[in-house]
Image (cartoon, rainbow, N blue to C red; front, side, top):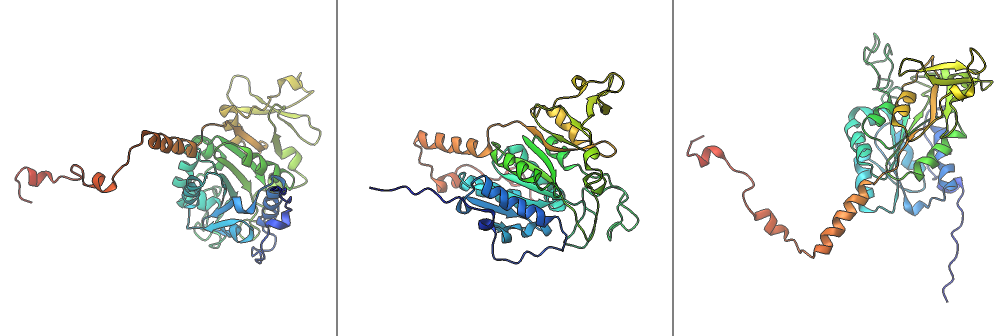
Length: 348
C-alpha cells in the first residue's frame, strides 16, 4: 500500500540560497527579500513550483537569492519572459521582480501588455524613483526637479505614477506598500498571490546611495501615522495618530479631501468606505500625494478570466475538432506577398 507523506512545511530560510546578498548596506531591497522569503513560507509555496524572473537593475538580482527556479533576463523584458513561462506551464507560480526604470522605461510596453492580458503572474515593482545600478540617473518616476548625472539642472519631466499607470492599462489587481512596512509587505504579497490573474504590487523602496530619504516625508516613523492611509476593503478611510482623520469626496467636486471626525459636524458616516472593486475610487487613491496622505494597501481588486485560461481553451477546442494541420502545406498555400509593379507589367 502506498503511504502519502505530507509535505514538510518550509520556513523562510528554506527559500534563501547560499549566494552572498550584494546590495549596498542599508538598501531597502534587503527588507523586501526577507519579506518575500517569509511570504513564500506563509503561503506554502514549493520551490519546484515557483519561478522568479527579473530584468536588469539592482532589484534584478533577486533570482540569485531565492531557492526556486529563476531567470535573470534582459532589460525590461521580464514580463514577456514570464508570460512565456506561464503559458508553457500554467501550474507554476510566476513572480516578476523589477525596478521603476526597468518596468516603466524600456519595459513599459511589456508591462502594459502583461497587465491588460491578465496573465496569471505576480509583478513586484520596486520604486526608488532613480536608476541605482547605473549610478543615479533620473528614472520615469523621478520627481520634477530631480538633479542627477543625466539631469544636472533638474528633471523637467512629469513623473509616472506606477499605480495610476497600472490602473489605466487595465490591471485587475493593484496594491502599494513600502520597504519599511515589515508587517504590511507580506500581507500584500500574499494577497497578490491569491489573486486570479495578473497582480501588480508597487513597493516603495529606499536607495540609500542615490536617492536617500525620497519617501521619508510619509514613511518616517514620526510622520507615518498622519501621512499614510492604510486601505482595507469594507473599512472607513481613517488615519492619523488618533485615528480621527478621514477621507471624503469634497462637496461639489470629484476630489478627495481630509476631514476631522468630530469637527464641523463631521461623523464617521461622512468618511468613505474602501471598496476594492471600485476602479474610480482606486484611481483617486492612487493619485494621492503629499500633503495628502499616501494610500497603502490593495487599491483595486477585480478578478477576471486569465490569459492562460483563454489560450488553453482555444487549444482544447482545436484538439476536439480533430484536425491534423500540415505546417508545410500552410506555408505553401496562396500568395504570401505580391509585387504589384511586376503584376502590372511595370519595370522597377
